[in-house]
Image 1: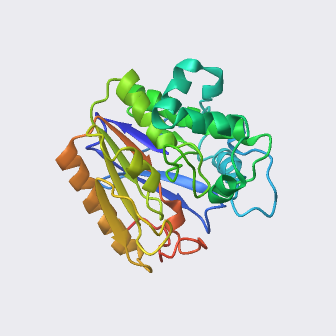
Image 2: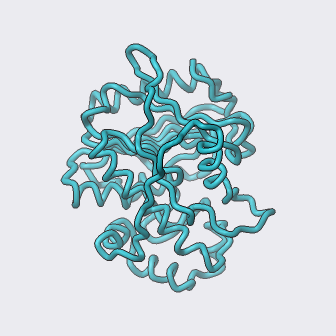
Length: 296
């Protein structure tokens, strides 16, 4: 999850790269649109040890990817600074209120109390162990902290987040709480942001986010995704760009750049929440695109 404040949105274009698959390390590179020069310093990075909780080794969702990313950034020398640690919303009512702004209160309370039905759990697809509640809320807290840091430092990144399949009253596709929606409500109410762009480049459409903000003029939702992929019943974002299966790096980057520039020029956002699409990799088993994630 990457966030930009208004002062930097016209200068920087963000790209999140990875190695062979979504389970391996991620490396973020910032590119100047005009001069295409790498930015030499890193923005604040947000991480919490709860991002990767104890998890079944054979589970389809690679829970260890978050700690793998953190360790790779540190051990490779890519990032030598200190990670910012977020507050868990469960420990702060002033932050928890924005979770309730994005979601039905009964839905959140049933999650906290482990009262989801078997059908609800199957739709989400995660392992509902004793660590999952705090882990999920920690991820939301990370995106909230990234909002604060981006408004102070112009840009910030959280090593988790982008849980865009969560609707107001149900979860789906490995997501329970929509951190993008919570962060947007937080930014509107707490930081007085009046125009928020959610720029979603996950290979799957940000259906939950689109649904939550369908009637919210202060939030402009963009989803660039593989059209013939989950979710098979799409929601209507402010702007949807459905790409065909097999889309290459050059085609993807052209669509991404054009869409980003259109959204900036037409909406003039105060804050951008960027959900990086590492699962567009040709090696991702659920992606269906043919991107090698190479800057062109």
